[in-house]
Image (cartoon, rainbow, N blue to C red; front, side, top):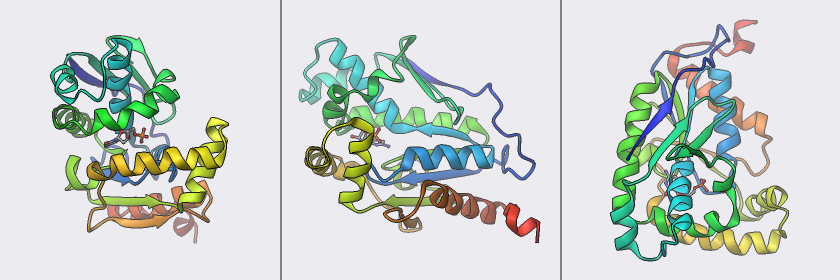
Amino acid sequence: MGISADLDSDTGEESDTVSDSGLIVAVDGPSGAGKSSASRGAAIALGLRYLDTGSMYRALTWWLLDRGVEVSDAGTVGNLAAVPRIDVGTDPRAPWVRVDGTDVTSVIRTREVTDAVSAVAAVPRVRAHLIAQQRVIIAKAGGIVAEGRDIGTVVAPDAPVKVYLTAEGTERASRRATETSRSPAATRIDQDRRDRLDAAQSGQAADAVEIDSTSLSLDQVIDIIVRLAREYSGVPHPRQQSR
Ligand code: DC
């Protein structure tokens, strides 16, 4: 059992990055708000590592389904939570996830896993186990953008930069529908169901900056997160430097 993160490859080429600062940027929000793309983009721009905590819940869910475990059986799921070894790569340019050495980066995005993951993520022993491991990864990273549902409230409540990324339900469903090639209406039904199931595990920290991405481009969202991180770190934004 256990988890580890790949911290080897370098991501911080830019001289105006905040890499090695130990900065923790927490990005929370519902599915479809654009957390992953924005978090990865911000991590690259800032020269920070990147942690997708949802991928860890997905990896465990894939492993349980692969073994034929009924994910609604919370007792069994809780008993098995610490059995598989889950490794995650934290290079924002190429994140990956492995379960017991098997690369599951793609297969954890299938509909089967997406439909089952909320039940797994709701099990307290699953959360305790994965949150403890997320904290170790964050502590060792030397600066990281971590995204999920509870980063700013539970996993890293002391993170100095916290973002809560939202978007209107219709816009979120339409973005997801483009990714999955399912209809926006069917995607919306699934999204509402997942929102309900994930609500108990999700939270907006009181000190989080809320970004509504409904009418923002990805680059605009990244820019806001990068500015917040640079402001906190005292690193001027490139456009401010050139003035
Ligand atoms: O962001 P995502 O769709 O990949 O997340 C997968 C599931 O994991 C989703 O049901 C919410 C849950 N999750 C969680 O409970 N806590 C986190 N920190 C991240 C994800």
